[in-house]
Image (tube, rainbow, N blue to C red):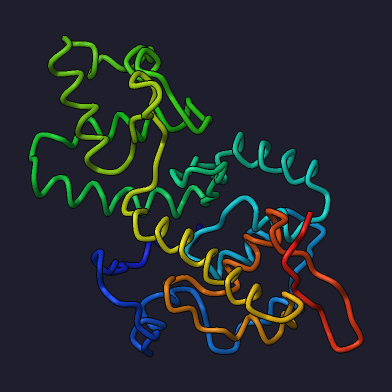
Length: 271
């Protein structure tokens, strides 16, 4: 969630792991400032939208488990998210990580990201403007779920654009997929996930960052570390802020926090 996705360069397979460089931090910290508030001081909020807005300034996008780490009442979080979706304030996306991961993105940020993807696509295909306008004007406001099936996609009351024959219809859907706005589900080729353009490096960073943080804690004698110290760690395998991963792991229950006399302790969950 937040600004249009930063441009990350992912290392090719077989390359050795390397320490993070200052340039890496500059690239990956879009929306982050040197004086940003510590995670320990801003871990829990009482209001879902306030939590979303603060984390928006820290992370290039927000995962649902991070929100669960920040607002104790998960039922209230889910209720608030549904309300914010209906009000077109944000969208929720299913992430292709092999787990039950969802991303949350403010609608205005998503539309900016979509505009960038559309500009790139127009450079390759001069006849694609109409299909993107249709997608933004009719599909996105009408379909708030994380997925849409093939028949729904072509049967909106205003979708004459995609109803002029199978070849044209498939061509237009392919344009949306190539722009990163739709992803075909592997288990059902007639279903599509709504997706965020250029999200590939983020997904890679999400998976690798999770492993790196858990590995760091698991190497400690008691598999725990002060949160204030842990959030200063520079990750080698993820371009994302370590606080992004900590909120994610706390919210998903893989890390639990314990209040101690010296501060909040992050500990690998054994449950």
